[in-house]
Image (cartoon, rainbow, N blue to C red; front, side, top):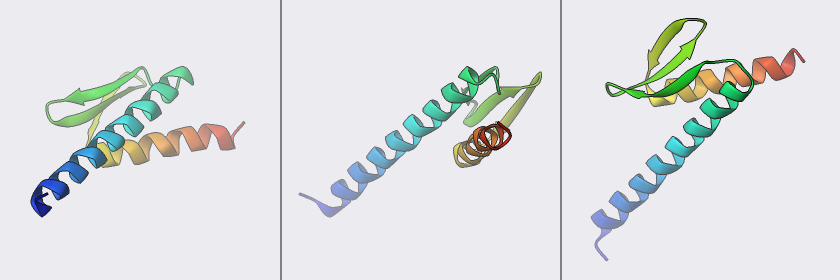
Length: 76
């Protein structure tokens, strides 16, 4: 196998895992009624919260959602 092909395959797998994690976090935040919706829009990740559309990179969105969920857990 070609080394470049292996790197490409691994990068694709990492992207899929990251997307799955982000989707799971977004869905969890919806179940907890922390956000109204989430998803990709125009190359950015959109989170609908308190009547506002927050646009950010997928990495920023993951951190934002993790903190949002953690904060609600800490206040319970």
